Length: 215
Picture (spheres, rainbow, N blue to C red):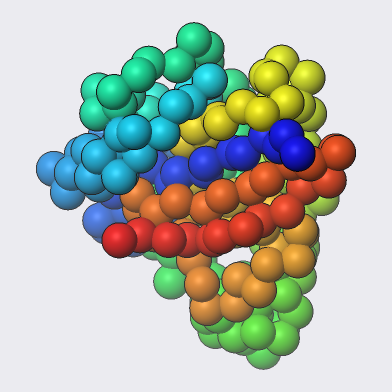
């Protein structure tokens, strides 16, 4: 029984992560800890034979992918970057303090933290509130993110062998959104930097078999 197995890795910790800044389509360098995140996950996956290594086209994801590749005993035949697996676009909130943003977004609706919003309205509701309050109208909705990611998944299905292992270096909120879409309980469970989440594809069906694992 052949299946494709995607190893989603959240990029290493960045400067903007360290300062609790909203980092979607904007970018910042990996910190020393972030580089160590990448090396450590690379060592964990060192003996896994990957047919392809894909990252989002942001610098932090590419840097993480390349550090992981240096740890692998066998290099993949395909190395790519794509916008499909980018982080959520946060519109006018890009670069601002995350706690301040969610308090600002939630206050008109009686909420003061992201966790309060997600607990009551789910991840879909959180994305919708941000979209509603974003004066730039650029912030992505839940469905925007899922649709974009599905394009990336479909490319993998078509381009890689049916029994392939694929490394995808990506981002926390987008990964959490896609996992939620496929039925994973992500409440209070945000992917850590350098964590691994595994998605299997068999007969076209997608299923997360593990989520946010970091040893």
